[in-house]
Amino acid sequence: MKIVANKKLWKYLFWLGPFLIAVGLTVGLVSEQWGLISLAFLIVGIAIIGSWIIWQSYQTNLWKRRSTQAGTNALVATLAVLTILGLINFLGTRYHFQADLTENQLFTLAPQSGELVKALPQPVKIWVFDINQNPQDLQLLENYRRQSSKFNFEYVDPQARPGIAEKIGAKDYGEVYLEYGDKKELVQTINQNERLSEIRLTSRLQKLTSATTSKIYLLQGHGESQLSPGKGAISQAIEGLKDKNYTTEPLSLVENPKVPQDAAVVIVASPKRGLFEAEVKALQEYLNRGGSLLLMIDPNTDPKLDSLLKEWGVRLDNRLAVDVSSENVVGLGPAAPLVTEYGQHPITKDFRNDISFYPISRPLEITSVPGIQATPLLLTKQYPLSWAESDLESEKLEFNPDKDLKGPLTLGVALTRKQTPKSTVSTPTPTPLPSPTTQNKTSPTPTPSPLPSPTTQNKTSPTPAPSPLPSPTTENKTPPTPASQTPTESRLVVFGNSNFATDGLFNRQLNGDVFLNSVTWLNQQDQQPLSIRPKEPKNRRITLTSTQANVLTLSSLLFLPLSGLAAAVILWWKRR
Image (cartoon, rainbow, N blue to C red):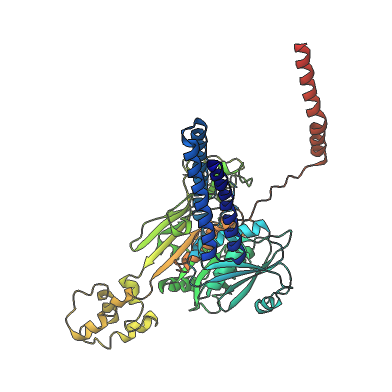
């Protein structure tokens, strides 16, 4: 009787353990504080259940049974699997990894977006004034937030929280605002047909975080590409520059042959007529003082820039670049070279082997010039897929060894020129701003005896070693050394084509990236991300004619079922 009473006592004690555990969990969950009381109930309950298991095993030799050992092994295996799954889940949450198998990497941030967010100097917040959280928009914002802890976003109902809507300036559902310090700007208005765009979000973010606004001048007056929308215009390229916080303005060098001092970059896009000598000289002087110039010169044109290009070691070839491999890919014929090989340069560093194409292009011939570093940007394919065609009248394109040039051809080049002693003399010795003529007038005054004429000064200034001792001359010859502290270097980018940046072709493949990255590099803002812009999803809709639609309907509703039925009848007939 005593043994039976002890068994009943332990049986009741066992049920007390789960009861105490339930009490401890209830107290902790309801109070949302895991204090001393809840932990005490949990510990006592677990201790009672453990004691009961030990007593039961002692009374019944539980651990010696084969069923107990098998059950224990199964329990340990189950716990091990659960532990492994928990660790995998923890690592997946802690270290995010995803594979984007879409063609345009639609679910992965472009390099420019990632670099921009990682370099944020202060917090940025995206306000989405909408009730519904679209999964596509939410995933895009999450991708941004993973790049930096300084990027945050929040969905707000403008009716439920009118104070925030009034503070930001939101007036309707679907508006997305970017807040950066005291600056607030509308990114876009989203709806069912238009979702949040990475292009617009990155562009607005770059615009707000940029400390300065650079001015881009576009030369006009020689039949250049028009800036407003139209045939052969570059209005989309202008909009791309504005999205990157540039301001654009047309430039005429006829009335005033001098490039403005605030010009960050000057663009000469497809001049149909030649420039005047004074205009070419103005561009040369602009480059000599550390300016940056982008030239896009089409075939069958002569902009009269040979003297400028010769200083940099560039010659415009009058032949036409031909690529027979692009006819079936681009659909524009062999006169639209397809480029997948790029030079090692910041402009093209993230292009890999992606595609850009240049309808109606002329090759460039590059020769080495002391003091100038040239890097080919765009290279066509090897011969026999690509060559420079000299016979532009012939309807059949064939390579002529006597007149034509074998590929690969250079369609674009980036050049830099450091400040040399000769270019330093063109600036005055005391300050770097006045023109070279003032230097010739002021230089003889401090050095009357050793330098009798300005010409001797110009000859001796590049080599300051012959006369370093006299005090007057040393005063004039020490300032050239700080020229290394003055900015800098001149930059020039030349393309034998302008069609790639025109409306309709600008947003195709990497064409827009080549243009915008070139301007950013010319602006000497190497701290800004130079990489591929975000891509919009491709339209994959299939447009069927009525005949094609009828064939598809008949094949799916009639031919396929009948073929399956016929196969079944044949198998039945053979097996019967």
